[in-house]
Amino acid sequence: MSINSEKSLLKSPTCTTVTTIDDAVGISRSQEQVDKKQWYIAIVNNNSARNCGEKLEARIAHQDESSKDYEVYVPSQKVLKVDKDGKRKTVQKMVFPSLVLIHCTDKLRREEIVRLPYIKRFMVNIAGRPNDKGIRPIAIIPDKQIANLKRMLCDGDGEVSFDSTINIPLGAKVRIHSGSLAGLEGNVVESEGGAPYLILQIDFLGYAKMKIAKELIEVI
Image 1 (spheres, helix red, strand yellow):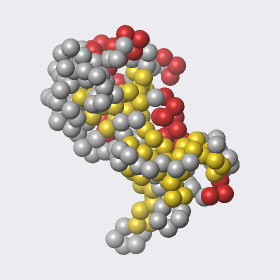
Image 2 (cartoon, one colour):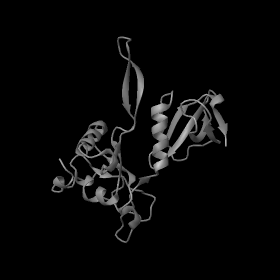
Image 3 (tube, helix red, strand yellow):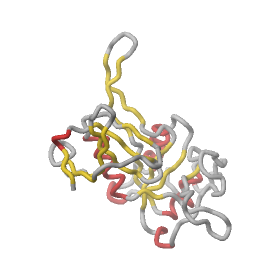
């Protein structure tokens, strides 16, 4: 099904997960965002992120890879689980069960994607200055932060957790100098046991944390 064929879909109900002073679409911070693709945070029903991501992918499956209308990213990681019988198996763990990240233009986001029945709304920047109608700007995650998160989740050797604490005490700025995450930069904090954690700040979502060997990091 083409994108244009879905223009008749109705807007979904307002979600109370984020601030209620924004409408279901949100506003852009500048006209420049209309034509530029950026990473937006779509809110969906809890535990439906995987399914919604697949539906979004299906809408553009017929398009050439080089000219797809948008890119979908549902952060996940392979983790080892032990069932009640003691059997070990690898499963794909969703990092944000109710969020889907979408790289698209603001025009497409406002006119097409937000109208899909499985998209509840887009997250807004509650710290941003509202316009004269009291509407807050839309939340946007920088491209580099998404690229770094993908590397940590796909190439990291340890399990990644997320901390939504606003004022987490970040340590030194570091770079991974070798291994599968070589070149990745972030901050480091130490646990109570002294083990270091690599920290990546992801705007509006929190901090991605993963244990890292001390010998792999260098202060920058």
